[in-house]
Image 1 (cartoon, chains in turn purple, red):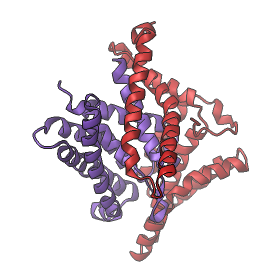
Image 2: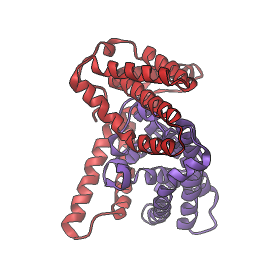
Image 3: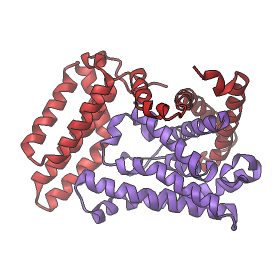
Image 4: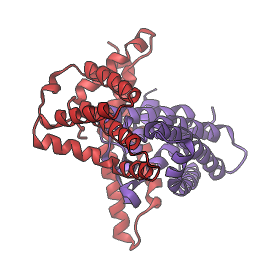
Length: 183
Length: 203
């Protein structure tokens, strides 16, 4: 039990740290960071349940006022802003990513973890983020989708990285990849 | 880890955190029901007044955290100018700024310890069901303690990379970074167990 709690807490801290370290500001001053990669890794490494719990813990700390989101944002304001759908989608994305990585064991790890990250971290995540933005900005789903498509190529790269990193981790520390551990 | 609570003491710092959060929920719901431009102009002006009351540096800190919304203000503004519905656009922009502004205001005037007390209170029904919430409380403390630790380790990794390569450190440092987090998790779990683990935390 101690191990589960520390893993979940350390991965919540990892999501935060990934969002704060390599800041690459692209257009619009929106910081493109590895934060969503952290969400994907929670799923591909910790598996569905622990991964989703780590993301929920991360969001709880953001909500109570810690500046852990990329660019040092945080507090309750981010849950009232246009990106709230993405925040709500984060834990679901980690859960789905973890579930696919756990269940699909026939192929190579990089492939199943990579596909899991695409399905969870992009399709599911945007499935929450786009309606959220449509509601907050009073736009149609098509218009909101147009607003966020610019970010999808970056997320595809992150999903591929999540697959590769998970496969590399299976090689160096197989016991740590709980999504692939024998139940 | 520094919280976003404002160091400038306001009268609202003393108000009960649960009350502020409940009021914020109600006001946010109302904001999204109302369509009148006058209503949104009035609530936005009121929000700005709240920010201005504790003084200039408080106001400046508040406006700084609202500044991240400018791409959305710009996009919605252009959209509604093009579609010739500026009033609708103004309502959406003001509503967004007020909703985020008020939520930030609650964060700025509530201490982290008060927020954690609310989380603890919200978890009461879970305790009644027999779930042990000290897991959650330990986890919160661990994240607050280890985010800066991981951040420092990540910075060291980046520096180690820079010392050896002319290229920028990119995704390549994420694997060792993840391994560091996993090792820390192992060590902390051992340390917790050595001190009796969660069983020692039973009241």
